[in-house]
Length: 384
Image 1 (cartoon, rainbow, N blue to C red):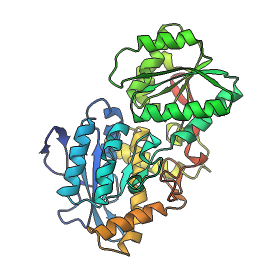
Image 2 (cartoon, rainbow, N blue to C red):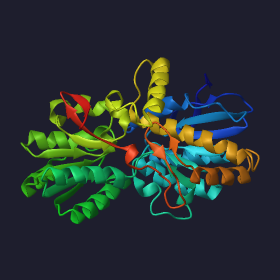
Image 3 (spheres, rainbow, N blue to C red):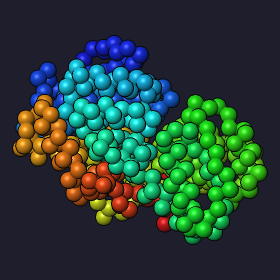
Image 4 (tube, rainbow, N blue to C red):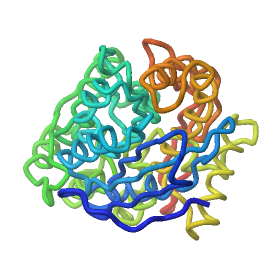
């Protein structure tokens, strides 16, 4: 059990907490989670999960220093700089939001600190660059999820598609991926709209989409904002099929959307439908163990986004012994060795799927990291 220390002040960052196993931990891991603000539905389970990560690896104690960036990309930068300069962290988990993560990559890279990003957008690792070689992504890349969605569209006769996504790295990368895959499979994108995560109305975008008369609509947004366009389209009388990305994979989507999200199809990890997945799935036991530990500590099931942080812990736990055999924790040499070990990860079974990292692929998921899921009678249901 990790010990919670008194709250500290950090510029504009709110509700900062310091989780520690001991004052003299040999390995320090920074965790930046948006446990307040618009991305809190994602950040809260991620912050909570930090308390479940291993505090001893290969005989070395591990300290997790957890900061809340209040969903603000500027505060994310402040937090990461503080963790690097003052805490001398060996690795970073976070931040929660895609714009937040994109904004801190340069600082992690400049400091030579491996960064495990529990965010949706593939832009944190693609295209690979000298800076992004320090980043490892613990959610499925957009292409893997999009492949499953487009395949379902083709199978079900979708010929025209409207896209609406958030005006940030998450939505922008999804727009590129969807345009390319749709073209490849003979689906015409008849509308491509954007909106802000903080918007409370998308009337203009909704009217344009309805006017384009698409067979289906694909919405790309993380967390609660994924509901807004779908609810607006239903209210305006749109009768076509709805698709969502793995950004909508949380119980709040069902609660906020109600009957308006019935029949929605998305591709996401097995975490959403764990009880419905075959026992032979390699990740089922790991995911079940995580859910049980989270429930025991917090009295409720975790959102799938928490599992992205849990997987970051599993990746570090596998890489630390390798790195520690080459250099002393707390040194630049150790951090470099840790980066190399993460990049060499092979067949690591985790909650979301199985990781196989390469120099070109710092996500590492394959088809074992996704399931086709629909909303049926207000519940997530595995598609046959």
